[in-house]
Every structure is written in structure tokens, then in C-alpha cells.
Length: 138
Image 1 (cartoon, rainbow, N blue to C red):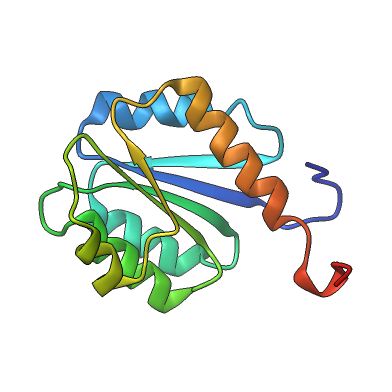
Image 2: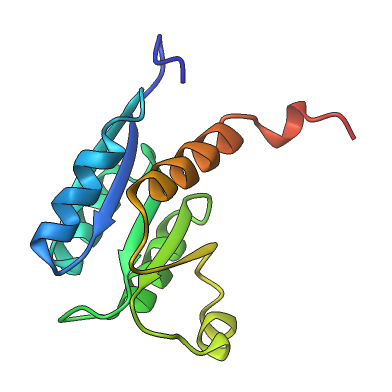
């Protein structure tokens, strides 16, 4: 990613397990041109997102967390900026109807997730997002 004369590109990881959140943050920080934030509290993550929504491109959230579920968080994020790619992660099976009701999850990753797979997934998403739809050849 070319970072010359561009706004910063933010990625956030929200997981109430502190070690996992920071492990994912460190791993994703290997992607050039992105600034990665890790949150253990979904309410703090939402406040940061609201204040910086124009810079965010990807949000990765665990499903089960205190104060609000990942689904609730991603729904609120979609309300603020629907262009942000929203990834749900969970070690638990999640019913498909929950995804359909919310319509706020773009991608689901099953835990445990390999670090290299997480990096590659986010890198691919960021590269895809970089191409504005208006420049695509029909």
C-alpha cells in the first residue's frame, strides 16, 4: 500500500481476551501502511471508531464480549460507516440467521485462526478496498 499523501489507514481488533487482541494487533501491524488498534472493551472501540471513522477500513471483532456482543458492535459500526469491512471471529458456532438478521458482517473467521491466514485475509481486503468501484472496467 502506498502511504504517500494519504490519510492513515486504521484497522481495529476487538477481543476481550487481552493476549489475543494484542497478538492479532502485532501480527496485523506487519502490513505496510496500516495503523492497528487493539481494544478489550467494545464500548471504547466504538468511541474510537466514531471519532476516526473516516480512517477505518477494517474492523475485526470477537463475538462473545462483555457489555455488548460483537454482532451488536459491528451493527453500530455499520450505522456510522457502512463502507468499513467488518469481520467477525469466534471460537463458537454462530447461527446463520444471526448474520442474516444483522446484515452487518462481511466475513467470518473461525477461531483458532492461523496468524498468517489473518494477515493474508486483511491484506487482501485492504488491497481490494484500495480500488474505487468507479475505476473498475465493467
